[in-house]
Amino acid sequence: MKLTAFFAVTTIAAGFAATSAMAQTDWPQRTINVIIGASPGGDTDFNARTMARYFEEITGTGMVITNMPGGGATIATSAVRDAEPDGYTMLFGHTGHLIVAEVSGLADYGIGDFEICCVPAIDQGAVFVASQSSGLTSVADVQAAEAGSITFGTEFGGYSHLQGLIFQEGTGTEMTVVDTGSASEKIASLLGGRIDVAGIAFGAVQDYVNSGQMVVLGQPNAERNPLLGDIPTFTEQGVDFVMNNPYIIAFPKGTDPEIVAKMEEVMQQITEIPTYAEDLEQGFKQPVAFMPQDEAVTRLNEIRDTYMPYREALQAAR
Image 1 (spheres, one colour):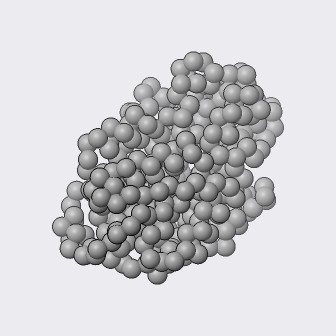
Image 2: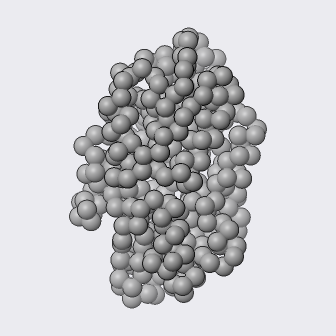
């Protein structure tokens, strides 16, 4: 299966005046609780905290980041879904949290149960890495390995679990898939030799790659992300594996549309700040991207439709 329809980075320069006219509200008047379903230090946490810093510069109002990892992000998404729709509880997640969790059966709700604000960024910095102790240096090594001999670390029911399924399908291999947890836990497991391969943000493992403790197998982008340097795509290596991950800003269902529109407006302003682009590049080798509400909802539903065929495989591993 070729997953290309939703991976292009979209930057929006037009329509700002119309959005600004819509969002005539005195929100925010107090600190906003931004809940994320990931541990501190990973790519989702980085994107949320970077956004929060610029949000305060623009609005004069702060955001507090609340990390609620675990359960395939269902702890976090449930907290936001059940919160008061007053505009002061917000989810910063990604498709793994709001789509893969539904597809895998970890959650009995999905994007339709939230007020989707926008796609504030798209993760194009993901790579697949192998631990030094695994002896793997290329996709060809993975394909030549005996079935089940390679251990792939993931979080069952999460985005990286789906990555593993699609990678196996594209390479024609069979790996032993184990639940290691979040990004920081994957790194610890790779360094400790407890897993052989994982999908993870390059920015989180770059130092380990440079020191020779990990080897990059490829990037799952349709075209090379130039910020990753000389890392080939899997497509270049003859593997049908293209998979990017839009981040999502969402509010509880019933939140005032003017608040949602104001947040969309502020996020668009953030993406137009040059230092924000520099921060994304330095942090996780991530180009700037943005999708307004209508486009984001359309794209996220397309992604959901693309992932649904993997429902049984994801649920079987639970």
